[in-house]
Image (cartoon, rainbow, N blue to C red; front, side, top):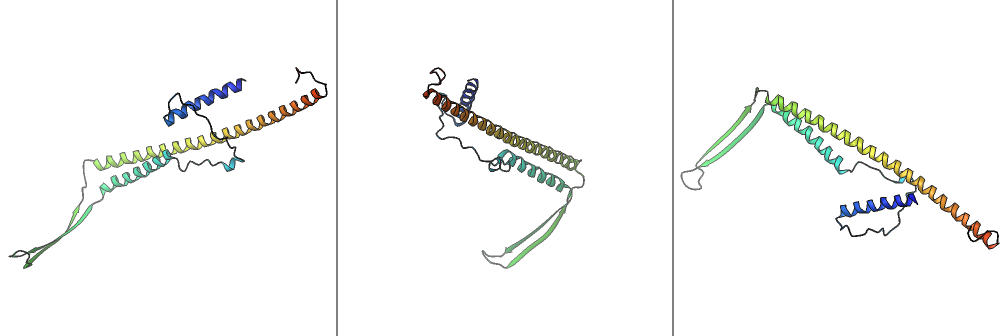
Length: 191
């Protein structure tokens, strides 16, 4: 009976949490409409962290930090710009009496910017390392949660097996007592 009270308490807590997450009123009741299916083997139950949104977000953050590092390091590289232009000039409207054209290259290299590039590169490298550590920690935590879920599933299956065995033993005990009662070997209070 203590187990039943504890189980009912956990069901009520889960129901309250489900109502909160769905946005139902507190007065609403949540009733299961189907029985729970127990997987045949643990291998048939998929525990994958590959599609977890928090890990995908951290992975994209890690890629962005890597690209930001390359952008900051790109500040050391000289820039080469090419440009060109062509003009039509005429004495009258829409005439092409004379043409002008211009082509050019511009090389720009900021060799010393008061150690600004150096500081931004170091900061980007540090941010990349922080994001990598956060991703590894989140992935390790997710794997730990998967192992915990597998152990909980295994323990639940074992409890279900024990409960089924207890129900079978109780049914058999009842059958024996009923048979003895029909033969007059047991009292009504024993039944």
